[in-house]
Image 1 (cartoon, helix red, strand yellow):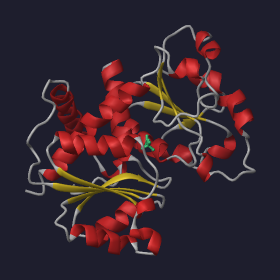
Image 2 (tube, rainbow, N blue to C red):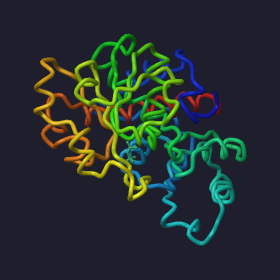
Image 3 (cartoon, rainbow, N blue to C red):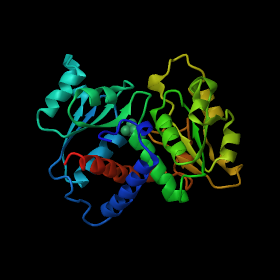
Image 4 (cartoon, helix red, strand yellow):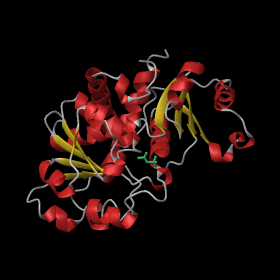
Length: 303
Ligand code: CP
């Protein structure tokens, strides 16, 4: 594997290697000196055509902790706004002797397109509603840390499955590791043939939460929704918003995850997001170690 385009293209042993390597790097970044010199000879460009807080900063920090040279690019402040194409943009960046490109783009398949057309290692940092592989890797790493393993665990992915690259990458990763997976959300936000991926649909949030060990709660992607889409934000919050009162009815502890950014009061109340059930900031912390592992393993193939 010379790129990370999606979880779909990985095998269970690839995931295990990434998690073992990430566990090592998590230990490293908790030391007083958080850096290792491993990638002093590697140059990486982060190219973001869509907004990001966590993924962009996490990749940058992971690269710096590995001592790589890093350049970061936001399309909004670039010559893309003057009409420069994706291939021209990337080839111009690569001619500055860049080895690896981390890209986020609003179009599904953009990372594949780049991998086919330019001479660099490509990491997909999210392509439209397709895949967000490093998010799924950090989610599984966090579940393993919390519950010991992913195999046999009951995971429900709640919310806007239809527009979610996080959902698809998580489904691939969780099924590959032997988890039981349900999706839960309004019918209009569940893809028609989702069962073909080996998951089941549970439209009732209370039933889904009673069943699960972990609820991975997704953001309602207002930017990808038609304004007339059912349900409205208020209806969504009433039927699919997770509240402390609902969690109290379960009579058991479940783990609450969310990839961020949170629409507080819509998918989760603030009380739930900030409660002891929530591992949201642990996911973000683990993201740096997981991305260090991915970059380190791919860079080893450049040498
Ligand atoms: N989880 C995630 O992808 O967050 P950002 O959009 O802030 O990168």
